[in-house]
Image 1: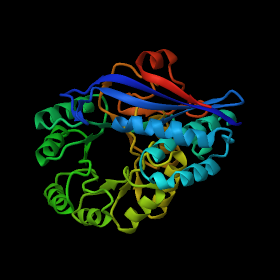
Image 2: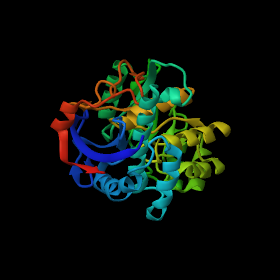
Image 3: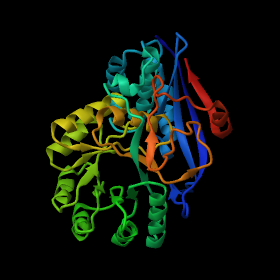
Length: 370
């Protein structure tokens, strides 16, 4: 099963976010952009992946087209471990955490899709998992700043069946508003501040919130590689979740060695793909650390996370962005129902993109390397 071509395609999906749009890199963020990777083989099978992008999509796309794809043409698609070692070693001088690893993550997911299709099995089965139909999800709210708007969206998400809600806010007022909105329900609130604070400030915030009932505090420290600073925040009494920004399994090893986290959060589209994510899960399990995947994605990266969680995580929570998309080529699999997601049972990822939606929302040209 030789790799004969690798294609990159970007789709931009309009969405609404139940509040005012935010700015990202100086632009209004009102479209979800997905960098899709398609791997073609000489036996006719095709695999799909998703590489981390957002504002970095042009860089990640170029990394795939100019460096990663040429290294893979002609290789045996079944040799996922060998390809991973070869490609990541060949690109290590270009960065161990950035566009080249992001790009390879998308290709590696596509290789697993191919492996499942070749075997006639879903990825969760290849990973040793048992059959599961549904997994619990949590609503990952965007940043609203206004506590009243935060409370309004928390109530709406609870009404749609979510029992876990994650905020992206940096004030205690917004957090308290969310917790108050949950009173009388079983819903719990997590807080992700996206590395907003110094360790000193993070400790002050964590101390002020330690009796508020925050389920976990995510990435409170800047820079994210300050594992000792993160460990000090953990001593304040709120469970700490982190890991989406670290480089591979050894990045998580540093977090664990420093006693910095309660919950490891590998991100399959950023860390090197499914194989590296599995290594992180195994490492965390041997140290008694919980795992919840970072996966606010919209295509194969999100669906790959379903498979990993279904197979390997004891009590998974799947992150679903709290937005309304105009359309998505991977509907209906990327949407939650009553606070849960469906796990595909077809071979590989178990999901194929809708070609009509791909064509309608594509931006730029598909690039094919062969």
